[in-house]
Structures are given as C-alpha cells and as structure tokens.
Image (cartoon, rainbow, N blue to C red; front, side, top):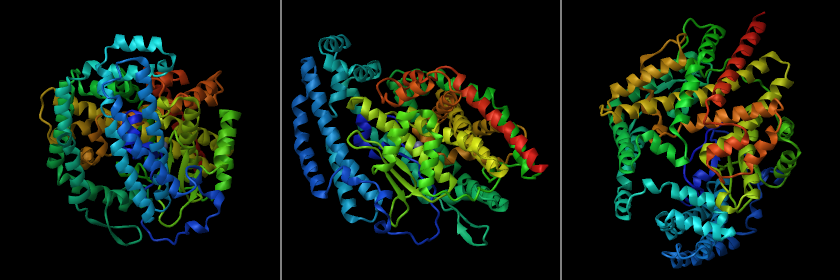
Length: 635
Ligand SMILES: [Zn+2]
C-alpha cells in the first residue's frame, strides 16, 4: 500500500534522468487471473483524468517538443560564464527553468497518455521521443553543477547579497557548495564518471541472476492447481489463509535462492566494495556517512533509528505471541506473519463513497486542505477505473508544469479506500508545494515523500476505528495498522541494521561471504522478532532477495518517513496547538530546506529518537487494544 520507488537526488536530475521517480508509485502485485475489463470508452468522463488540461491535442505537444529542441543548443552560451556576475547566473537559472518546465509539461502528457492505455502505439512513440529529448536536455546543462562548485563560496555569498532575485537560490547554492570538500579535481571526477558502468555492474549482475537465470519450482496452490512460483506469487501466497501453501512457498523460494548464495555473496561483496571506493576517494569516514550526506543527514539519525526501534521492540514480540495464540498454532513461523488474522471485511465501497469517507476522515486538516482536495477530486486529477491496457497499481504524478494527477485501479475494497487517501496525500503535497515554492524548490525529496501519504492513511485509520462498532472490522483494521508499522518501520529498520553491519564488516577488512552475511542476518532477525517465533534456518539467507540492498543505505528512509508521519498524525489527532498549521506549512515547503529541517518545522525532530520511540509506543497501544478485542471475541 505504501511503497515508493525512486532515487535520492535533486529535482533537476530527477526530472530529467529518471522520470519514473517523479511518481510515487504504489504498485499492487497484480492478480494474474484473466478477467474481462471495461474499455476506456465505457467509463464516464467524471472518472477519468483530464489530460486536455495539459494539451488539447497531440499537435500542441509536438509543437512544444520542437520548441524544446530549439532551446537545447542555447544552453551552451552560458557555459563558463556563471561566475561573471549575479545577473548572468540568474539569467542562466531562468533559461534552464524555462527549458525544464516545458520538458516536464511534454513529459507529463506522454507519460500519462501511455499509462492510461499501455497498448497505444502513438503514446509509446511519444514517450520514447520525450525520453530521448530528456537525455539531450540533461546533457545540455550537465556542466552547470561542476562550474558552480568551482566558484569560491565567498564570491557566491557576494552575489547573493547583491541580488534579491538570485537570493531565492540561496539554499540551492548552499546544497551544491556543501559537496565541495568531497568533490575531486575535474580530471579525477572525469575518471570516476567513466567508471559509471563498472560501478553499476554488481546490481546489474544481481538483477540478471534474480530475474532471468533463477528458475523457481512449481507449487500446488490452495485450489489444487500447479503453478510456477515467482516473487509476485510468493507475496500473494504469504497473505493467503492456506498454511501449507505459505510454508511450501517459503521453503521452495528460499531453497532456490540458497542454491545461488555464493554468487549473491559475490555481487554483494562487489556492491559494498563500490561503496567503500566512493567513500575513500571522496574523503568520508564511512560508507554510511557518505550515503547520508546526500540528504545532509547525520549518522546519529540512522543510529537513533536502530536504537529507538530495538529498545522498544517488546510490543512486536508480544504481537508474535498474540498472533500464534489467535491463529491456534503450536509454533508460529515467519511465513505466518502476513496471513490474514481475520478475513477482510466484505464491505464494498463505491468510489463516490470512498471520496466522501476520505473527505470526512481528513477533516482535522482544516478547511483549506478540504476545499483544495475536493476541487482536485472534481477537476480531472484522478483516473479511477481499471480498464483494458491500463497500467496496474496506483500512483500520484507530480510536476510543476501541471496539476497533480492520480492513477488508480479502484476496485471497491476497503484497501482501495486507503489507496485513495494515500495517493491524495502525495497529490496535495505536490499541490501545496507548486503553489507556494519557486520552481527550484518545487519538488520534495524521497526522504520526506511518504510523510503526506502515510499521514492521510493514519487519519483515515483513526476515523474508521472510531466509527466502527463491529468487532471483526475493528480487528481487521487494527491488524492492518499493526502490520503496516511492522512492515514499514520495524522491518525496514531491521534491513537498515543489517546493511550497516555488513558494511562495517567489509570496512574492517573482513571478507564478505554467504556465511558471514547470513550470520549477520540470523542475529538481527532474532533480535527483532524475539523469543516466541520459531525460526527456520533458510530465512537467515533473506538478504539475497532484497534488491534495495544495492541502493546504498536507502531503506532507512521508509522507516524515518513512517515514524515522522506517525508522530505528525498523532499531534494532529490530539489537537496539539499549532499542529495543523505546522503540517500545512511543511506541505507548502517543497525542497526549500534540508529534509530534517523541513520536518522540524512541521513539528517532528528526526535528529532525536523521540518520534521513533513514540511510534513504537503507538505500536504497543495497538497491540494491547488488539489483545482486548481478541479476548472479547473469545467470550
Ligand atoms: Zn506512496
């Protein structure tokens, strides 16, 4: 329900190089069955997004593409001149923004057009065209960052004091210059850039092995059909009620991976060696420090996260035992942890009712939020229905050049209502940001990206729990909430701890072997899941199947983002004075400051362990409440 995909990098890079990162995608594992889907033409207009708000026809899109092509060569004239004067620098920033804005607009149109029907050959061609243009746009200004970093900070300071218009870029320039001491000479940087393909190879090799070469065995599903196991099916099986299927799927999947564990250990060793190379050449003291510095985050934040979760882990241990008893098991295994505690409440919610529910649940955010959001629901932001050829899952698309767009595949389940609240959280964050920030700060970083979406989910959860009197529905909602905290805060922190320990071993000169990596995993797994779990040895090798471990200290951001949103939503729900105003000003702040500072202004200080501790306490309260309800159910 709440996973994002993307890389931590500035908006400027993000827009041009990895457009997919623009969207905060929450893809749902697709059901693989065949079902007759509606055609797009059968869907009423009010349930479709309005792409004509971007271009009324393809010809206008084509005209802008030509304009972009004409603008690209003009960037060259600024090269080597940025240090001349504040006016010259400002002139370049503005010219670059005009180019980027037009590119974003054309990109949005082609991207969304293709997603509404992925079989549309015209849209596919448009998307390929705009992606190629993106590479050219990117190349045309690639010289700018190194040129800015080479200017003396005193000179930049002088520029900023002489021009109010340039002063808007103070934070942006500060962020560029911050990296100065870790930037090498142009010749050294050139050599490192040339090694780019080599640096990416550990991840590429791992992916090829995982996605292409590994063949999973078959398994008999609960309907008695023999199906080939896959990561997607594994995920679905783990959430199913049939224990025999869950156990077999876990055993077979992990055993298959274990057959390749030495190759995975080699790719992991190369991956960590790359991080160590970058750390040492750029003069950082550890891989962790080097990675976190991208977001200007201190190592203490990472260490606080691990300590605050593990010091307060008791509620999770209790939950494991509660689950065991409630499921009537002698032993509980990891493959029992995602099984439904209670079947999803068979409540069909029509889309219009979902919108009404979300509006009511988000009332605590105040009238301005509600007014803007309602307008969004009614003015072509959302593409609601599942239709033939449409991209699966759900996402929110944010761009400075358009209003927010949301792709849904709404299917009338309660879970879908949460998806609406989640994606609308992203969309409103985008909306407020682009209406309150200049272009240069008009995007938000991955570090804070999931805060607005999960805050909305928390408010919806609270609303539904308060409203419902039905015991089963209450238990269902509570188990969803607990599993969300377990999956996002606890599991991602456990991954983050493994990643830290694995790097530390390599940094101390120890060899990275399958045995040593599994040994580290063995220990963290027991520390987090505690004494009531029955552990199967094969789970010690779980590190082989987590692709995020190739993204250099990335997963902790899921955990910190979640803890921040939990703390903020609790403040809002408790009616803490100024909480809503602070939260809204955070939504309006884009990337105008470093993420930790932005969150501080919103009312949550991630440089202290408190928000994480509070979220673990919340988990404790939820588990206690669940225990009471379970007892009631037995009576
Ligand atoms: Zn999301």
